[in-house]
Length: 331
Image (tube, rainbow, N blue to C red; front, side):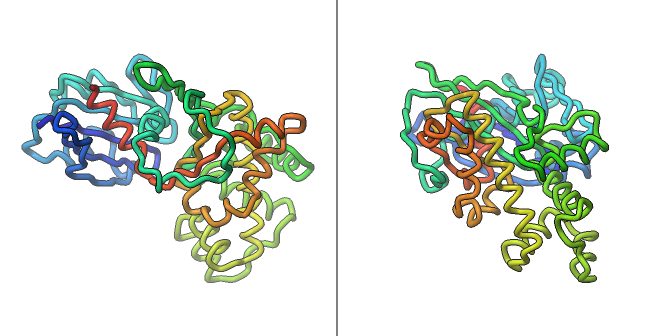
């Protein structure tokens, strides 16, 4: 039975899995083994692959990797990691007949229609056209975006670097944020605020600009210093119901919804707009309270149009890995 290696390579973590292809017997791609590694702990992808596959690796029939960065000529420099990944070198190293290197949101887009219905939760029902284009956006270490165009031979994926387009403030507070960010960076993109690191930046700036009080509890301050501060902010907001951190999360969700609305205007995804990435499922309860969709629709004369776009929350954090497996095992 054919065996394929799939990988989802990000600035924070690298996920690998082996899949057996049971489609010839009427089945599907079945995961055989998987593991997750902190990306920053390894000097390159090859080191992680050797650890995952072991001293006597299996014979592989194909491999594919979704990587968090632009892919040009089957080569990629990871955006938030000092790795350069070359498909030709990996193919020789793994001794596989077929190896594909994809942008991570290209891989994620390939995995969407393989997900069971319970892994897609509507945030806005809209009026879905199955033959229409779709789009996906997801905040994690960065802010990924991709476009999906249905064709007679399967979906055509248009990978983008849309998260690096200019940040567009909508009110006086966000104009203040932009000015503060301009003092730090020559270019201010949406990713500077709509991502895991962006959530921390948003909190820091709201305190620095006097819109929120600084944290005075020594235990929470210690957690912000020792742990992942984005996770601490989210925990204090959703589990601790701390109004300071709730204000940060609600502004983050509003920024996220506004950027999703920008993507929808540029692509008109009548087949659905999908909210993916590692952060959105953690904010699931707050996303359903309406702030995301209100910001998504808040586009002046285009509000009635955006109210018709179906919007789904992707609950499965491994959709990108499944998409990479699909790319590794072409029909």
